[in-house]
Image: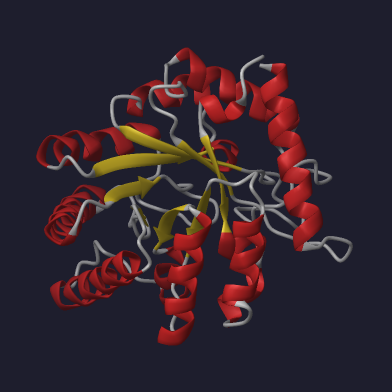
Length: 303
């Protein structure tokens, strides 16, 4: 591809994966500043900031740097094992209120996008009921978000039976819940993650067309589907890690699928964020980020 990748997408980086120490409450603003100072990235995806002073510093930093911001609820949802489609109504209400607080914090940080996910898949016998409760949750979150501003709610598709074991899940299920949500809300969309396709045992060429009609963002990254590998699962290793499933050629092919379906274009320029993190002793955040930028540039040049 001769044209700059910036003409077709907005490259982003997931802050709390590139710098995992922030999930332990360390160096939130310091590491965020490193991303904001790197003009390769036009978008940063952030998680919660518990300290209100740190949150205000982060807000001002993001404003000055002219970065677009997405807010991820996963760092809140996953450690607490929150399930928005729990079969207990009291628990569903509790989860809804927690995610609403995430919406409030996202607005405080001037985020334009909110990332949400489904909870654990309960199995085939209870899947229909769980989907009903999940739809109710998503309708309420989209309504609440819309009442407070113009932030877009994006449903992130996770693996179904390997690591996160999420209800959504297979792309056909993502399409099934997206049809009524997109019809009812103009602030709803879907996010697909390249690193989840091997874990879902789905091919982007077959799966992407199922959700292409919805406002869509994308994540890129790597995974290890081999069960006996010590990095097996949804750990977001660097591109090219030994035993990994996705490297430059896989990203090139993903770009080609997205271009074929007009999901990357000068008119749309969706967010394409890298979700990678240092996992091995010889890796640092800086090295993994540099690896990612090289792979993105080379994959785009090969399209």
